[in-house]
Amino acid sequence: MHRISGVILFVGLAVLLYALDKSLESEDGFKQVAACLASPLAKFVIWGLLSALLYHLVAGVRHLIMDAGVGETLEGGKLGSQIVLVVSAVVIVLAGVWIW
Image (tube, rainbow, N blue to C red; front, side, top):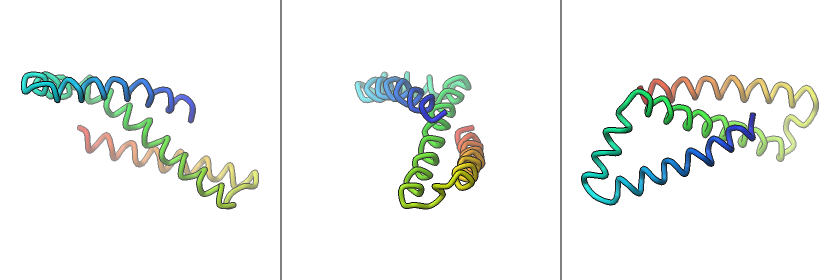
């Protein structure tokens, strides 16, 4: 799952950089991007990209904690995975509330 979120982030970053470039070209470009991002489909896509970023962030923090020597056992790894899923789900839901 960690690799999938990385691929989603890579592709999504290209799209978001294009939107940023377009919005900085002119006032009309900014209005076009703002109108596009106001649609429900665009909000869903942004939420999906943000979800991948948040999962990637939480899983990365888990790996940093494991590098410090915490949770390196089989039981600790399983518990860490469950914590990552729960924390990610909560943060993703909160991001959805913030976007919508």
